[in-house]
Amino acid sequence: MNLQFAFLGSLGGFEIFVIIFALLLLFGAKKIPELARGMGKGIREFKDATKEIKDEIEDGISEKPVK
Image (cartoon, rainbow, N blue to C red; front, side, top):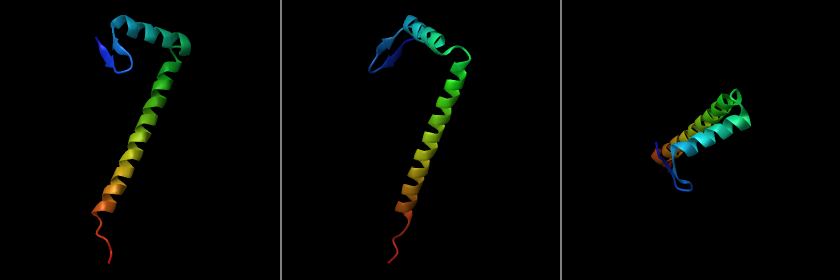
């Protein structure tokens, strides 16, 4: 498995293992699912907000100007 990130270069299996191990040491096994759940909720809220803004802009463009 080889992941590519512009700022990291290529990550191999050993590097991913070291990152996961460091996360386990820092946060503990019980805290990681809570952190992932919080990140998921944040991303979902961001997507919903951007969708609402996009819909408002499209509605504003599609409305005919009142004369």
